[in-house]
Length: 238
Image (cartoon, rainbow, N blue to C red; front, side, top):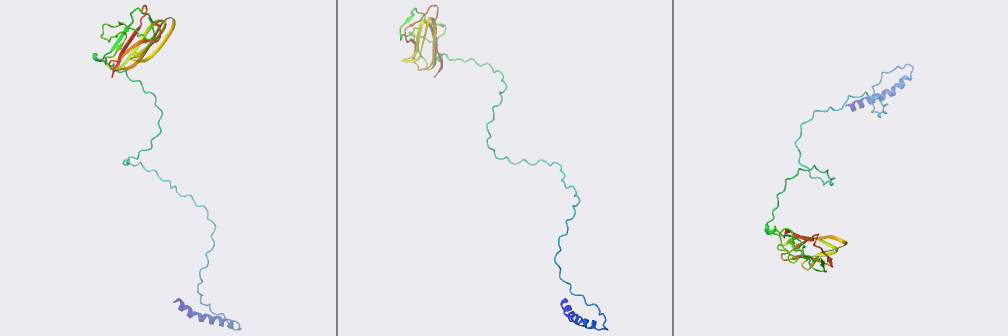
């Protein structure tokens, strides 16, 4: 519709444009009527940005309010075990415990007992090397202990035994404890006067094996005014 209106007005506009100068050049001319408004032009380009505006007023406080504590949730599943930590330092000692009850007396059956304790009573004082010392006097005849035969102890039970001797001598006492043909311990003591020497050993014996005390060199053993003893007992059977 706009296109048809333009086509209809265009000849009239041209005619008025050519006639107006001719009339105005005459002395008797007059002003014509205003022409029809032209077609609107296209939009021009955007203008430049205006100046920066002033800073606005502070806004309202937007801090969130803390609500009430919620109910406890359902416990979760156990987590995986963590890595093993370093070993900690030792803790302080604990308090001392109460004294325990007195233990019961251990009763050793008579058939598991083996012991002896003898002293030398004979008058011999000088013993040549490698002579067995005969202990011939029992300390406890009222008890059924084992006996020595010519200075030898022979085991009736197999087990671990303890043996000890105490010898009084003058000047020299060199002795060894012997199991069968094996020397178990060899000791020697010397003095200008009277001396007391001792030796002991723990040994495993089988039934029928023997133990005795011998001199390793000439020794002056006394039996008057001082005792010389030889003692042994079974620690535990095997």
